[in-house]
Image (cartoon, rainbow, N blue to C red; front, top):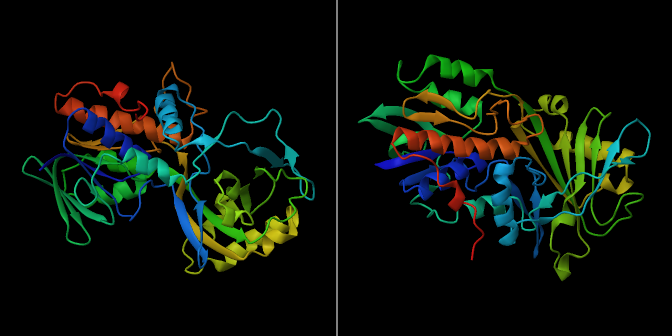
Amino acid sequence: MWDVAIIGAGLAGLTCARSLRSAGAQVCIVDKSKGLGGRLATRRVSAAPGRHYRVDHGARYWQPQSAAIAPLTQALLSADILAPWKVSAYELQARDASPVAVQPAPPSLYCAPNGMSAIAKYLARDFTPEDTLLTDHRVTHLNPVDGGWKISCADNKVVMAKRCALAVPAAQAADLLATCPTGAVEAAALSALRAVKYDPCLTVMSGYRNQPDMGQLDPGGWMITDTVGTSTDWIGLDSSKRRRLAKDVDSTVIVIHSKPAFAQQYLDVGDLQLAASVLLRANARKYCDWIAQPQWFQIHRWRYAQVKTHHPDATLMAAPSLVCGGDWCKKVSDSTSTTTLTGIDTAYLSGLAMAERLQFLNGGGQSKQSNLDEPSP
């Protein structure tokens, strides 16, 4: 039986796992996806024989605001996982107008040249696949048993642990808690999870086999926030994040994020090709005609893209040995402003808080946070 099982291998779950492992706990991570990272998501697109592109279709960049995450940011920079993204930021402020350069320029942004999922792989580097790191295992039921938790997966895999952390979207955590026997978890916890609200998003990834004319946009890297449109929230030149190989010098990749209301129309639609076409054509009309004529494109649906209503604490205790957390947890305190915290910040801080709560239950004391984010030798 593991000391702790963590369900969810996004930033919060991986942070929690690293903190507990650093404190000496025997930890197992379980995730339904084949990959790692949750919203730290990178898709490897095979556009043609011998041509593969990494495209960030979840988190767009790394721009944390909390001082607590600074050591991890530095470690990622030292490990060559992150690099400064020298991007020009614009806003579309009026219909039928040109995008306006943001002044002053946004604070330093970091990208992951090998894709945002490289951050998750770095965080999970001390965990062993099919042993302490179980991917492609979708958890379907939780049951308290023998002073711990029985975690059952759709493929009949069973994980036993003394304590458990649910580092998944609040709606998914609520669904798992609902599988527990009556009285096993706090009724108030279910209500609190259901109170968390999300905005959805559709992400379009599109590739072009040349370097088209960018017009007034910076060919070295650009992103545009659309403040007036009804379909697009953000569009960016994703290929400007990459270390380009000689065979890729003629490739251009852009990523489009939709507005929540637009995504809501397509949440339960099986074929998203129409939605992708609408987003591509809309941005072609606004910026460059070639955007509507990609060599290839793909689209991804995020039901839980952005947290709209947070849980007002860094964690949520559902039972004496069961804690929930993630980017949907935002602790409000007098000493720390939370108005500027990003989803990266809230996920990381919640991961640390979950680890501390679980260590406290075991009498383990404080998290060894100071050892977590030292740069690799």
